[in-house]
Length: 484
Ligand SMILES: [Mn+2]
Image (cartoon, rainbow, N blue to C red):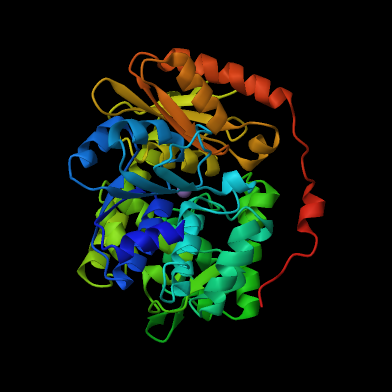
């Protein structure tokens, strides 16, 4: 595939790159954009929320004959062919391919086609990186962005939040060899190296720590009871500056606190796990921790300012990074407001037999309702034994649906992505749906919400009927690494 892009580069063709607006897509855009820049290739880049006919028609009027699609496209081969006609396209995606027939002027790299589990073991940014390795120059440093992208798609599902498969064996290995990433076992707390401890705790939402996440006073009160110095002279200390014993003490107090709040042991113990540090980013920068980098990119996309995220992933460390940091701040505030609404008004949540649901109507932007649903579930603000299906009004006449569930429910057989896709198909009238087993989405016409919920319940019941094997906790906790 890279050879085709190389041909385009050598022929000095104008290339139009489209990438997805989530953190993975923005990382993929950063990788391909940087690789093309390094070859002095003229290109235009645009971020799309989804690849539908409206978007394709818009770009088809720009007079390009060469397109690259990152982190989207495999499900839209027919639409691409219909709208872009004979133009040449290359798709670098990891979403399940829709049709098996690939038109001859469209080429795709999709790990599904080679038998890989692309939900867990490689992201859109990973695919873009593997191709960029063959675009000349030394692009191995871009593997750091592939790590950021994979974290954005929550592919750290191995033991202790490590990666599995291609992410672990190729991407992380390349990034370490290139000297751009360090992998270690540590407290998975946001801003480990950069923030005062109470701020870092307050910013941590995976795992969600009740009474501490999103709660500055709560975090300070919790720390006040521990015998750990929060300052060294005039300076606030960071998690990274704590001694091994202090880290252990902090961890065990947090775990005890979480267990008291009914957080399942497996999740409480997930405070310690694999962390990735971007060695070339400045200490104190948001970008130094790969998970924070990914959250920053995600917030720009979700705020419809993905181009700022692309600029950061392509290397801007000046004004646009500052802008991205402000977007992240506003985004967090909106999330906190959404969570406050759900906490203050428990009646907003309706419980059905297998699922629960809320309708945000026009209260929050349609791009963040999924994050609010996911956080409410992880925070145990809502019943965590049932998947949550959230609705919010989006563009004229439409409702955006976001589904989130837990690892435990996925292990019991639930696949929200499959459920959303089937339910949307059944609703018809232009409804679309899909995604991953643990997090998925759909867009349906207004007024179809109740019917959609009924269909989802029916599909979930069927899915949970064909139970998958559940790995036991004891097996999983064998051979765990500890803080070094
Ligand atoms: Mn992706």
